[in-house]
Length: 208
Image (cartoon, rainbow, N blue to C red; front, side):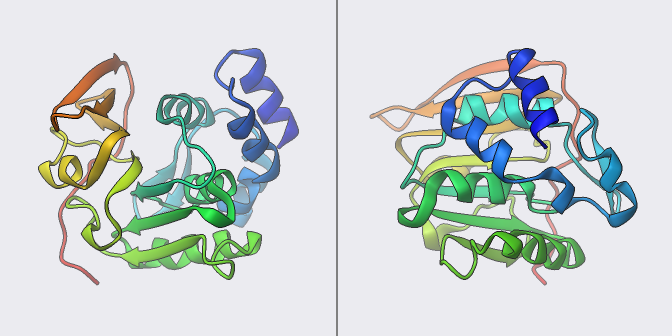
C-alpha cells in the first residue's frame, strides 16, 4: 500500500497528515476479493461483486481531502461497499470518535464488517454497521460532523442535511460531479461542485 499512497502523494491527491497516515496503515488489499489482491495498489476501481466497485483510490483521496475528517469526530459513511472508507475514517477518528457505516446490500455489508474487523475498529467500538437503505441517513447517531457518500444521488437528500451538524461537512456525488457542502449557522449549505466523476447510484431499498 505504501506504493499506492506514495503515488497519490506525488500526484497531489493526498495532502493531509492524518489521511496520509490512514492510507499507509489501512491497506486496500484487505478490501478487495482475493483474486484481485495483486491489483489493489493500482489507481483503478475494482469490482467487489453485486454490481458494485471499490472506488478508484484517487477519487477516494480527493473526497477525503474535501471531507477533512479529524480525530474524535462523529462520521456517517454511506455506501461503504467493502469497507475501505469506513476503515480509513475509523483510523482517523480514533478511540474518541465514531463511524457509522451504511451498506444496503447485505452480502457486501457482511464483507465490509469482516474486512474492517481485521483492524479491530468494531471491537474497539469505533465502527458500527447497518445493512439498510442509506438514502435517508441514520438519524439515531446524528448529528454528524462529517458525512461521506460513495454513491451518486440526484441531489443532497434532505435527511442528510438535517443530520449534519452546524459547521459540519458533507461530500457526495451528485449527477457525476462531487459536491462539497458545509452547513452554516443558519442551516443552509454552502456548496462547491467538482465535475467529471462516475459512481454507482444511491438507491432506496427496503431494509434487510
